[in-house]
Length: 105
Image (tube, rainbow, N blue to C red; front, side, top):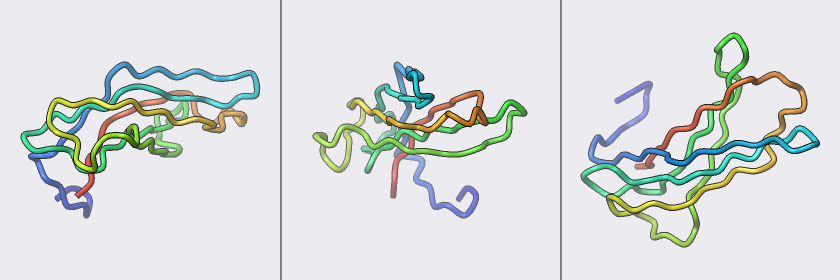
């Protein structure tokens, strides 16, 4: 158990091919692939997008669900695309984006 959250070590996911871009209005889009990597399938996989301030502190967190066409449990080794659009960066508060995979219990 980590930080009050129940975990299952057999379910895990990672992100690959992550790309972020900022449009002319100051909004970010983050895209990539999430891959099920555990010994059991990944239930309801998500990409977790951490927005960090220039001092290194976590400013905000967004999530992007995997492509809705996969099954509820993504089998080990399977990948699906994700995209999170319209992340507001107009205020300039965050300066770094880090993305990781997560499975739900």
